[in-house]
Image 1 (cartoon, helix red, strand yellow):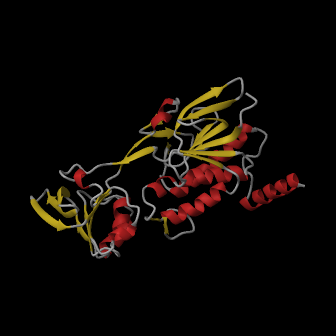
Image 2 (image 1 turned 90 degrees about the vertical axis):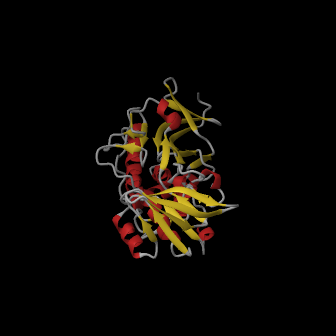
Image 3 (image 1 turned 180 degrees about the horizontal axis):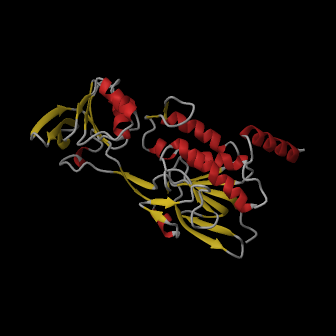
Amino acid sequence: MSEHNVFDVTIIGGGPVGLFAAFYAGMRGLTAKIIDSLPELGGQLIAVYPEKYIYDVAGFPKILAKDYVKGAVEQGLSTGAVPCLGETAQTLTWLPEAGYYALTTDKATHYTRTVIICAGVGSFEPKRLPAPTVAAFEGRGVHYLVRDLESFRDKDVVVVGGGDSAVDWALAITPLARSLTLVHRSKFRAHERSVAALHASSATLYYPGYEVVEVRGNAHLEEVHVHHSPSGETRVIPAQELVVAIGFVADLGPLKSWGLTIERNSIVVDPQTMATNLPGVFAAGDVVTYPGKFKLIATGAAEAITAVNHAVVYLNPAARLDAGHSTNVMEKRERAAQAAEA
């Protein structure tokens, strides 16, 4: 086994939490590798809503997801982490004679002493709107993912949904669109401040009890038919673009076969250590669950620090759990690098 290139830690997931885990692992002197099934780093932020503002990261009142990812990638790779993109994790096998794990993907086998799972919600597909004819207009006015806000400029746009994504998209598109209508069948589930901003905007709101029952058009979408269940009324809304933001279907995929304790598609961890039930395997971010868990980027970053620090002690029980202030850690790391070069 001595010929294997064994990393101290392998991070599953290249989203903001995985990137911060990679950065902090480097700060603690660990060799780190990032494995992600997507072709670029950034996770859901870059794959699903690069043009959407995010609000739950310290230091930014609001920031476009793509801009946040740019900084997160720079930081994440700044301490030497090696990214392996376009690879989906498949199996995890402990090699007792070697004292480390073999982690296979659909492309290669990686060797690692510890693992930190930062897989977000796992693989995800947007929930489809079941209304008749909607599927026929995908790519012709119906959107489940938004890659370019400018495509909505001076258009009549309808957004469907009442969660954070739907409200955030409505707020982002309203200043660009000729008109924006939001349709939702129940109460809003978004942040109160965002909902207040939506009510104060020029958007037209149809809720609760409203749902899209049909879309029509020729070569491109032209109108959206909205039904109000309590009254039985149906409205026809002119629209060239329809954004469907009613959630995602998430799946941990092959990770479910690793022997991890899983509840409702989330990995159970010890909140004090972020350790899973597998030795040397930790997890952080939206993929984990424990009493009092909050699914925010900010809390995911804190969980990543906890996971890395406990991975350090797992690898070397004599090591300090708390390395101290980040400035001191980086100064020690830089002095060690200079000494190695001398």
